[in-house]
Image (cartoon, rainbow over all chains, first blue to last red; front, side, top):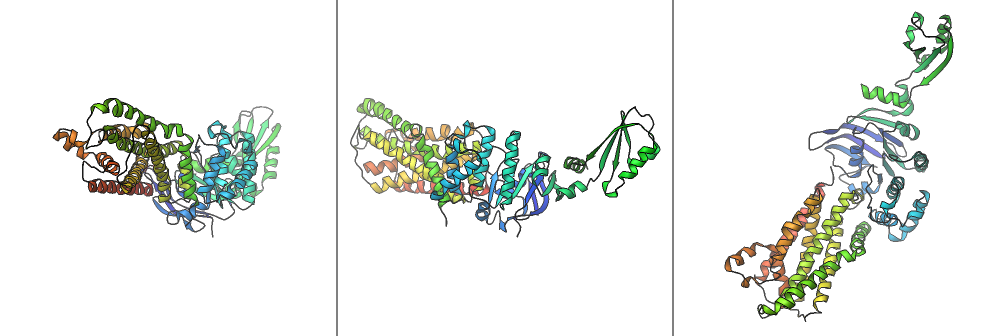
Length: 303
Length: 253
């Protein structure tokens, strides 16, 4: 049984805009999965349909085989959502926010305190438990939303741009925290437009563009889509004519540097070095650059 | 069926208005004292008894109903609207709460606040005059049904309203004038016949009249008209709330 199953999901808004065009994919139990895409691609719409914040137009969405519309109460109890926008009661205290939300998810009063304490301690917010939400910094509010999503120990955690507007240090500590949750068995679906975040955390990545999934694979397979290595040869003096023997490497001249690309799979690096030596150019240094997920992303979304 | 979530939301809603009791419970009591002082004491002595009841005894049931209506309506409408405005209403939507659980949790808080306010107004009234009760059953029926009715109406308004202006339209242009003109301060028999007919189109008149019957045992309009109208309106607003929640009206995109 998959944790999340999405079949032929379409979402059209009243004004005729199509946010999702017949998308299908599934996420296995225990996976750390990313939806990657520019703003407005349809990531948040997908999440909102999963969690009951948006109505689908057609298609099926199941969470551990529970339909999010027909069995909405069972489906909701399996998920914790950290939304992109702050949606906390600004006037209530951190502790009360968690206390009531634990209740909404059916946790008896007697069990709430210990759960709240351990979560707030893990996230470094225990000292702030009696502060009103509006008195907290942006990063702390984000952590309150994370604690709120985890209060009922959901099997699926959905993170919608969880580190937007968070400082570098907090971001790194949250990444560690999410990774640990995932290792303990929580299935995590993350949306992000920070490629680094998806690259760092996720096993599989779906690239969403204009309401479609244009690629879905493991990080390594996605990188292979654009498998090439760029070699930058910096010369001692500017070059006017490109040596014909380098043309097969797609050579380009940039000031006093030559840019060459090879496919590392074909293992022709030594051939390239031979060809370079034969040109008798005076070489100052050689740099190589690997494809990043960002290159793949730009390559795919440009099509 | 597990009701923990429902009780948690009810507790949140009740604690919300109790936490700010100075803004939610006290003001209607002060308003009522002012009306009793101005109309009951100073002017009331110049107004002859209405249907054999002193003028002050006549207006107290109306003032009580006024407080109940305003309290029930403003509790659910402002709580839900602020939740919507802050986005925090999403907490209810992503939780395994059913629609009716959300509606009833909000409504119970509205009814409770209305009854507390009603009891408060009754208590301050007792400082000025003695009060007799003709029918406890009718008092209970009208106080509970009318506070349910306006709690539902408040929920519907909060769901419909897209901004603060829209939020205040009904309270300012409908409920307040209809309440003041709803027979709180006069009996239909005191009006010229034309206006006596016009006021019969005001639903709040029936609520005030039926509630007053519970105290003094006398009505302007037949009691069963009032009972029936309150029942119909309550069911109407309840169905409207359920329909709006089910559809996710302005809650889910």
